[in-house]
Structures are given as structure tokens and as C-alpha cells.
Amino acid sequence: MLRTSYATVYAFAVAFGLSLILTPVVRWFARKTKAMCYPNIHSVHRKPIPYLGGVAIYLASVIAMLVFPPNDSVALNSVIIGGFIILAVGVIDDLYELTPLWKFLGQCVSAGAVIWLGLSISFVTNPFTGAVRLLGAFAIPLTLLWVISFENLVNFSDGLDGLAAGVTGITALVMVFAAAKAGAGGITTAAAALAGSVFGFLPFNFHPASIFMGDAGAMYIGLALAVLSVQGLAKSAVFMSILVPLLTLMVPISDAAFAVIRRSLAGTSFARKDHDHLHHRLLELGMGQRQAVLIIYAVSIGFGILGMISSFVPVTQGGPIAGLAILGLLAVAYKAGLLTISVKKKHKGHESHHG
Image (cartoon, rainbow, N blue to C red):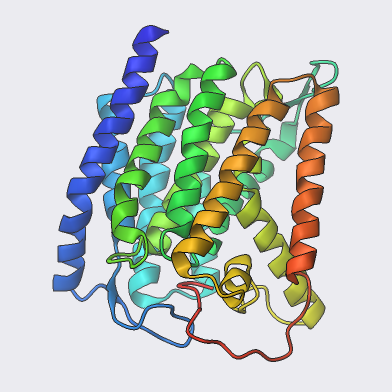
């Protein structure tokens, strides 16, 4: 156990250090090759910013995982191979802007690859009785949906400098503790490596950002979180521990859900960008980018702690804790006007990178 703890700390440190070194190198390469995110009406930045930050995150995390491999070959292979596929899809999208259909097909290929490598939500545990129920034919479609949802969720949340990086870094770090507590130590080094790579990238991505992770980085992190949550937490002795990443990501999850509701009520496409996300509302309240992002970090940490508490107490207590937290977030969202449909707004340069 002590050896595993040391390996987890070392994996985080190696990934963090590599990310600090590799990110400026990738930034230089992106500038040289004109792999830049140019300003448009949806941009918060007013000058070209290099893309390809996701490449540094991928390399740093994967190298650290290879040096300190998790005790789970499915998790390791899935993150490396599936991660490379979705990273490549994201790089192409960042540089040439794929259509939503082609991007979705790329996500399906990456999710299909990790399923082929052995990732599967093949059973669920009744938290009240402990009985295991096999999912049979539903296992593959459910796993496919899980992976693609995480890929899109992180990509969707990449709206302000440092926002997606910070929230996902917090999520990966909380997963380290949750996995250790749930007896799923097999994935702790991998989660620590992912957290270290993201936090090593964050100094270059925090406002004012000098590099973006792009769709490549966002979708890779999403896939990695999906894989580790299934291989570690969902299959652990404490099944309710799966609440930990879900609650830690509750801000982007709820923001995405509200956006789907808004766009459905407005009769517009789900893929259509708007300026009614939580971070836009915070900016409209007069907050700066840093302040808005730090507030969302704080909320994510709070939900992560709630997730830990609700997962490791009896279900009769944990369920209500999680439920009350979600209801509280819904109330805040309603008060902030996230569920309203804006007819027309004036934007003062506070737009997201990706929408």
C-alpha cells in the first residue's frame, strides 16, 4: 500500500514536470507551423493563440503512466490507444474544423477502440443489497455512450482560459483519493498522471492563456476520465464511488444539460453556440475571467468533497446528500437565468473558445 502511495505521488510529479517542459515546446511548434486559434465573434481572445496543448497533456500523462504503470492493463492500453485516436481526431478538428458528423464518428472510433481493448460497463451493483446485475447486450452501447459523453462534456466546458483544465484536473485528483478509498488502487497512478499533466499545463492556459488545449486535449482528457472511472470506481467494492467524478464534474454536466434544454425550447440545433453558459453569466455580472474560473473551481472542489462523503457513507445518507447538492445547483442555475432563453444580448467580448 505504501509503495502504491509513493508510485502515485511520483506519477503525479513526473507528469507535472513533463507537462511544464513539453507545453512551451509544443507552443513553439504550434507557432512555427501556424497551428493557431484565430479570433472570431465567439472568441474571448483578441490575438491568435497556439493550439496543440492537448499534445503536451497526452505525452506527459502517457509517459508518466508508462514509467509508473497502473495495475490495470485495460485502463493503460485504453488511455494510450484510445487517447491517441481521439487526440488525432481533435488535432484535425482544431486545424481544419471537422463537421459535427465527422467529429462524432471519430469519437465513436475512439470509444469502440477502448471497448475492443476490454473496457466495459458489464454490470451494475444494487447499492442497497449489493446484488450484481449483468447488463448483457446493453453493456457495449452503455460503455460507448459513457465514453462519448465524457469526451463531449470536457470539450463543451472549455469556455474560458483555464476552465476545462482546472475542473478536469480537480476531478482527476479527487479520483485518486476516491479510488484509493474504494480499494481500486489499480488506477491511482494513472489518475495521478492525468492530474499532474493537466496541472502542469494550467500555468500556460490560465488567463491570459498563451496556449489552448483545443478539442484534442479536451476530448483526450474526457476519454481518460471515462476509462478510469469505469475501470476503477464503477468496478470497485464501493460502487457508489462512481458519484465522485460525476459530482465533481457537476458544473459542466449541468451546464451542458441546461444548454440542451435551452436550445430544444428555442427550436435550435444542439450544436449551435450561444452565450448563456454559466461562465458567460458570471462574466455578465461583472466578474473577470480569473474570478469566474476560480469560482467554478471552488464549486467543483465542493462537489468533489460531497461526492467523497456521499460515496463512503450508507446509501440512505449518501443518496440524499448528492440529491440535495444537485437541487441546490438547479436553484442557483434558475436564479442565474441559465434556464431562460435570451432573445437578444449585447456581448462585450466575453465569449468562449468553443461555445
